[in-house]
Length: 247
Image (tube, rainbow, N blue to C red; front, side, top):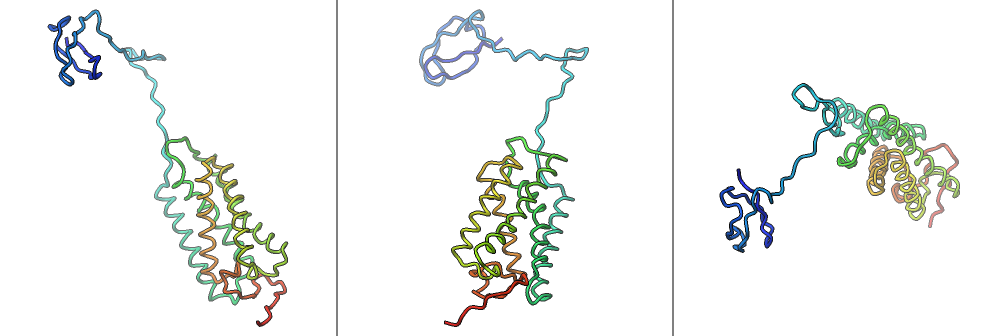
């Protein structure tokens, strides 16, 4: 039976025939002379003994717990893609259906997009090496996260109105940047608290939703800020708009 040998010089491991037990010889790697241990000196590493119930042959009847990989099924991909396509069509159609996009249309868009985007974002951003959420628990957490995502646009409207803007088209560039920073902070916290991802992943998770909703709002012709609307002061919410004085 071969003897397992470890060279004390280069720590190379190899096996030799038991007929060389107790004899000297060069290491096949570093050529340093070593002494082959006899069988009494050989160190044998045993695997840990299995505990728990066993069958008649002594084999454990317990099966190891396999980690579940979170991924979207084909049906879920079809549903998510379908919702995205419908939303894009609805956004483009709004440009031709309305002179100014009504507030309820925008609200419906940000709400309807929040859950599928949060769902898809979690599938792509979560760390597969860490345990995730599945089934009913995941659905509840995504519902809470998506609700807070949609609320951030209400926060945007509230901040704009609080600062005296009669329409979102009057929100200047500085205010727009500040509002987006606040929304990113709130959205990242919502993702972090609901889905327990890392902060960077949570920030990117919400940024994905924010970016998609802004692009679709622009596709619909909505004027959500002065830098994105060419400085026009039309009013998409039915509030008295304040026309700009000519320069």
